[in-house]
Every structure is written in structure tokens, then in C-alpha cells.
Image: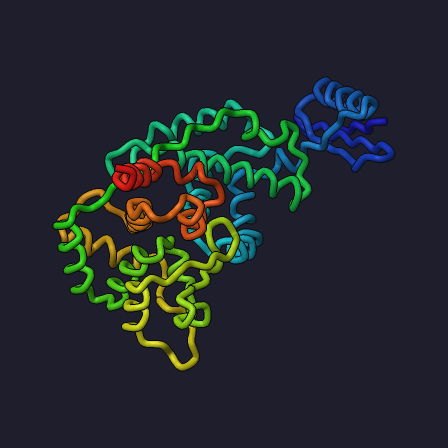
Length: 340
């Protein structure tokens, strides 16, 4: 039975105690509204469909993001991705647009509008890619999962992200440098004040590794005798052994090895990012990123013609051959020449 009492002007306090349910309370402006609310809640309890909305109404998405970043993300992302910071930018965009909404108010319409607004945004003069927006929506879904599982917050609408259409992934980048552009880039990398920039770029091409995989590479995982390196904490979560080509060994032999070992490139992601961008600009090269080095490496492997797609996948770390479809035409061209 509900207990209703007047606390002051326009303040009617309702308290419902029911066996099997937590004590439920709410303050409304009129006695009529209080009675109506109490009847509605008791009816739902009778039918077994009652959800406590209190925490979902009290907690804003901004509050949840702050708690997620402080208490959960440092451990989760260090374990899974060695502290990559993309999640921080995704959370920042979500907080900026949706941070003032309480969790109970975020439904599929709110999420759909966020999706459409972000797709209309531009970055560096270009429309934001569908894959970028999709990653932000996946982060929003993860936040709702965190609220339910870790914080025990009942979401009256469930996870609203599951009810909206995800944007399509953008087409993969196909930017490759000309021979002249490569020469200019190599000159500027060699001239960089960051002495690790050139070997890092050369090793990215030789191994087809991602930036994070290179920066995580430790000397203890480099076996020059067997010509194999073990890449740990990769994007898909699995360790991956990659062959060390003669070019890769030349690069590694040129680097100093500390007595106590440690990382091959002892620097942060943003350090190499800024050094690389500066070298690209000095070389007067447009629209080229560090990740494009991985595309170049995989393109060169496909162009060899003597490696199967399964062998290329074992080097690149792709779990499905579908991810390598963009390179199959290069592979086919070489096979055509061999077949005559």
C-alpha cells in the first residue's frame, strides 16, 4: 500500500513498500498526481513488469561517462588495447551532444538524431565517415551495458542503440604514394628531430603492422635468429607472429638495444603522430596518414603474387578474408601475368 504525505507547497511525497521490491519513492506537485503515480506503480508491480526508474532518471549520460572514464576504462582499455585513446574522443563527442540527458530519456529517437547530426558533421573539410559514427554508437551501447551490468541501473527502455540503424562503413582508404612522393617522405623522415621516425616508418612497411603494434613491440619479442617478431596487444586481442624480412632485420639491426631490453620504440602514440604529420607536410604530400603505411605494406604483399590470401592474412592479422577483399585485384593481376 502506498503512503502519501504532504511535505510542503506543491510537494506530495509518495512511498511504496512491496515485498520483493525495493522501497520506491517520488515527490510530485499535486495530490492527484501522487495518487495516480502510486496506482500506476502498484499496478505494474502486480503484473510483474515494474522497473525502478529512479537511478535512470537521476543519472545523466554525462555523469555515467565521467564514472566510466574514471573507474572502468583505465583497466578495461589497458588490458584490451594498451590504453589506446580513441575511446576518450568518442566519449567526449557523446558527452557534448547527449551529456545532459538522463539515461531514462535516451531512446532510439535521440540516438537516431545523434547519428544523423554526426554524419552531417565535417572533419578537415570532409564529411565524417560512417565508420567513425558507428564506433561512437558502439561506445554509446557499451556505456549502456556498463550502466546495467556494472552499476546495476535498470534501463526502462533497454539499450536504445540496439534499436537504431547503424551507418554503413565507409570504403577503405586506397591512398598510395608515388615513387617521387616516397623519396620526399623518406628525406623528411630522415631529417626529423625524432630519430625513431624513419625506422618506425620503414618497419611499418616491412611488417604491415599497425601503429599501436609497433609502439608495443619489445626487444624480448624480436627473434632475429628465427626472423620472427611477436606482436602483442593487437587490435583483435590476439598475439600475432610476423616474419622479419631482410629489410626489417636491417632496420632492427640499426637500432640501439638497451641493456635491460624494453620497447623497440620508446615513445607515445601522439609523439610519433606529430612527427609523422610534420614530415608529411614538409614533403608537400596531401591526404596521407600513418595508417596508410599498413595499406601500402599489404598492397605490396598482394602485388608479389607468390603469397596466398591466407598467408597475407596471417601477416596482417585479419581474422576473415573478407577484410582483405580490397587487395584481391592486386593479387589477381600478378597471377594473370604468371598465367600468361
